[in-house]
Image (cartoon, rainbow, N blue to C red):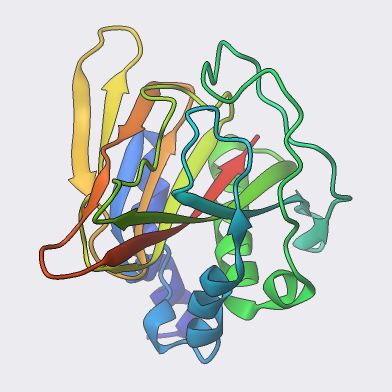
Amino acid sequence: MSSTTLEKQSVAAIYNLESQRFIAGSASEVLGIDFLAHPDWKAFQAFFEELELDKYMMDGGIYRQRRFGRFKWFADGNRLEQQPQTPYTQPLYFNPLNGGIERHFAPLTDAIVNNRVVREILLKLATAYGELEDIQTWKINAYFNRIIATKDFSGQPVPEGKHRDGVKFSCLFMANRLNVSGGSTTLTDILYQKEVFTGTLENPSDVLIFRDDTVIHDTSAITVNEGFKEGYRDVLVIEFY
């Protein structure tokens, strides 16, 4: 069997988004890449050790560390271009907790931007979304998030509660989780307010992708496991619009 045929089979899961609002599973199943065996995987995980405290948490929380950057993708040449760093804003109707202000997050480092795991994730998503929607270019937001839980406080992956991001596709890509419980994500139908998915990213390279314009999403708090002082949940969040 040719490599082209193997590739088509391995990435078939993401193309279910043509008729479904979400897809979940390992990266091997959803994206057709075994990132755990990728030579740049350990470096990708290590980036989450170099994030900076999110200073814009209006609930006073110190549980989120983050880096943020923007890209554009062009089908012509399958090109991915990093965009200039600018303040991040959300309207209050999308984010009632932290919206309505300019937030100056720590930028992605050159090592992150050039990491092959990062680039292969973005390119795989971009090409699949482009084929699904017949679109030649995408704008991309990429957030490296570490949510921390300790004996003194829980970590809130979605402190604003149930919401939409105002984009076309959202992807949650698990890098690592250590000594924590919780972090269950729920997708709720916008029209009928009925839950259509509940699940937890448990393992490195687990993926959840959903059509943001069809559902409201939320993720429950994480708590540190008994016998440990601290734990964390490392997730790369990627938005396409």
